[in-house]
Length: 158
Image 1 (tube, rainbow, N blue to C red):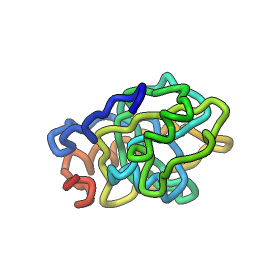
Image 2 (spheres, rainbow, N blue to C red):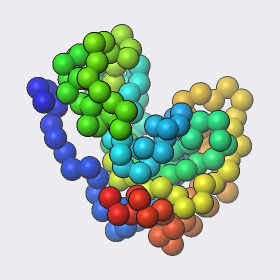
Image 3 (cartoon, rainbow, N blue to C red):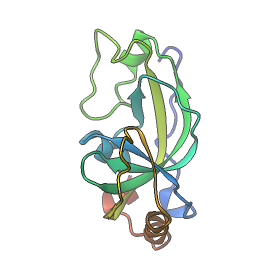
Image 4 (cartoon, one colour):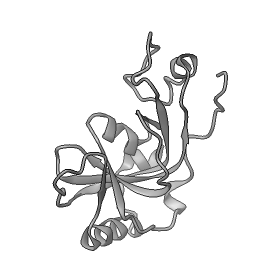
């Protein structure tokens, strides 16, 4: 890849501590499921973000947090050549492309994915489109599942 480095898919999820998850990113399916399973490492967005660290992943329209991962960096803005060459990071449906998805395209790099065995319901605030601050009850439910190792087999075995 021209300007992009190849990196390991993610750290060992089973040895990770149970972090406090205060924010969750809303992502449409099937991409949300691909991210928490480890099949998709890059979430393409039209803007960068300063948010880093442990985040929840919300499957848009479901009212549930389905997993967690680490958002450790943002790559971009991407050039068309970089975007074409990054198909392995963009998930199962990604292929080469004749154009970028956005005028300025950024890859939010997701690492250490963990899919929750039991999705956790949350209350979606009015107007929230990209990020949701999760309540303390949801934070505790996520922490409980992670600390008990309650993640689905596909995320654990990757």
